Length: 455
Image 1 (cartoon, rainbow, N blue to C red):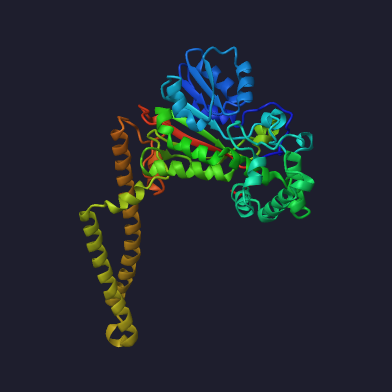
Image 2 (image 1 turned 120 degrees about the vertical axis):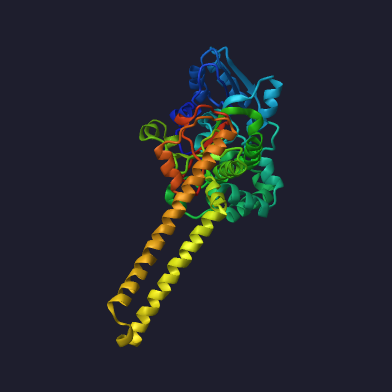
């Protein structure tokens, strides 16, 4: 994540068009940008909600928030508050604000924080003398102290688990060895010192020069120092307290650790029917955006989860198979029994024809045997088509039941939707264009997959 793009450029919002399309902010909406950062997304959202709407922007980095306030000073309907997005439920109460129509969380790392924070986030030569803090807020323990107080094994685990660094044990050993030599060489106090130690601990030709050897270690220590994964988990657990029924939430992730947490949380919501997943395949950043903003080169919209009536990847199809009526199963069983009984008769005649051809080989027996084979093939296709029909009927019924349950009356299930239902992959689905009412908030995440993390 770190050091893979131009650090001198101002913050450019990632996947802006996708965010605006999915959130669809409208005049009068109340939108929360929980990681307002440089204000790139916020400015565009404010333009959509007009002066009739309201935007709440929060950021944990107080210096960055101050710059954003200056940039958005012309908007009277923008409320900017210092705070952690994990505490949004509490911030809403403090600000006496209602639940939002839309929520945006961009978990990406700001280029402005790299270039101008002075907190040791970057390992580039221009920032080598910055103090090794790597924290967004002064209340957190700086990385320099973490390196001193954390044991070698635990430090290796942090670098491996949060950074995916295969040389984590070498790096941890080198760091602790340097700490033991503090009297002669001094403690590790700057980002440049830590970067040099990491580079010296790994093999030459690290990742064939694709990324700096310090990249993964810096990522891991930053995540650990700020409790980023714990913050994300807290946010996800409190989404119902932040987003109102009918609202939407967008979460942009930048590596597989964040993505996995969001994905698992949304899937749990889907199983509990409080939310549902509606997108199965990633949507990458456009070629134009990648050229304009290299930071988005690996951006992918991995999936969406919905609190609307849109439902995908549900387990309703499996449940429907267990809910087939006893009468239908009895009819199928009787038909199968008769068909296979006739088939057994045909097999008997075929076998006896070979054993006693004089007594059994005649046109009548041959016709019976041939018909038995035809019955077998026909029965197979009948069973397959029967299951498809039953699944389709049950899925359509389940879809209508769920739509009625949440008040989406007179919803049309078009032919494309019905075809998808019959495919057995989706239990209940109603496309957004077919909805009369929207009663549940829509959640989706966009994954910015950097090359340094495995998918």
